[in-house]
Amino acid sequence: MTGGLRQWADQTFNSLEDEFKKQLASRIFSNLVYLGNENEDLPDTRRRRTLKSLYPNEDEREDMYKLVRRLVDARLLVTSYDPSSNEVTVEIIHDALLREWGLLKWWLKRDEPFLRWHQ
Image 1 (cartoon, rainbow, N blue to C red):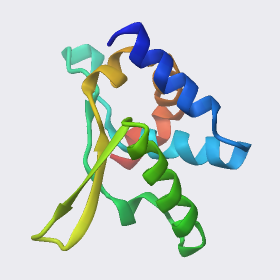
Image 2: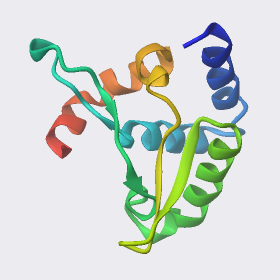
Image 3: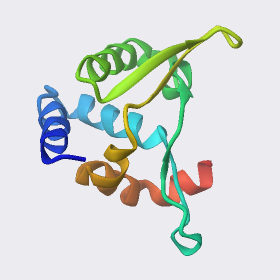
């Protein structure tokens, strides 16, 4: 990942207007990663999820959709349509974000116990 992409990711995150959106972004990115295993030399990998699976309750749906759209427009996430499930899917745009974006690495470290339990 180039310094420019890392800087772009930081700027995009820092441009979010309030703490709620920042927490939501943190959760989105954390949920789009499958944690690897250092002991087995397996790196973290991108994980495709349905857009619907990213929000735990209906109250967050509109905020989640808007934020995902904003992160897609910023080219940090990508969406696609899965015709077999009739669902929109979301994933991180590139593995380089997993390896190099310090903020994402910090979120994964912070949330690791929950993420390991969840996966």
